Length: 341
Image (cartoon, rainbow, N blue to C red; front, side):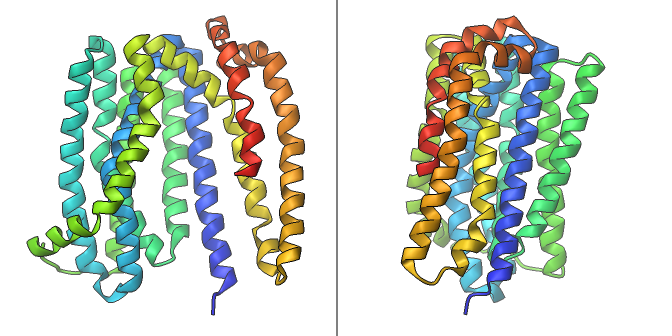
């Protein structure tokens, strides 16, 4: 029998963590735009987008398989954790090398290459953190993930504010972001090891081979996701420049508040769905939620369509971002499709 309360708590923990992460990222973008300008904003946007795309390759493929393995064989959690950690660490190093080759082939400027590669260093702690989160997810202890992620992201935002106020540049922000990822990986690793009571398990080479074979399908999916996630930004950086990447990202960030609102509403109606025993009642609740989300999205689309110029200047504090008005007006219509998805 499914226990609804732990399910709801875990869902709330994951959504809360997602809201905090995306909210702090949005505020970080605003800080960089206001204090460092559109060029630094573009370098940060490009670096984060490329880092996110390459991180998907080792983390997403392994994460799904690890959650399933630990959930099915909890008594083997320690050996699975150690073996997956070793494999993911090796994959993360290979991914870092692949990103370095990609950046070298594209031929970015020296300043942009420095920022992109600084942020690329976060692939190793990010992937190790995902291994820990996979184990905690399989144990149904998502609240520990939410606490760790939310705390470190808030500290990171405060640190970014202190850095820009002190006059530091985008390099310091990039170092702060990577340091936050490293700290998160360390904290989550300590949590997992503490729960497992510091087990002593040796790395098994044959088990590593099995892990790679079992994760092959997930790797294929991860490669598609990585290509899809970074395609627009990569093309913009190749055929335009980092400034164009920044303007596109600035327009896309305007959708974040409404997206977070949609996710919060979806979470709030989750218990209502759980209480419905008749499919017809579920359909009525779904229709009501879609109508509510559309009622919220339509004014937002109108606002972004007619007042994008003022919003971009107000949020980012510079008329330089007004160039992104047409992009914001086009992207605004994504909000109409969001309620249906």
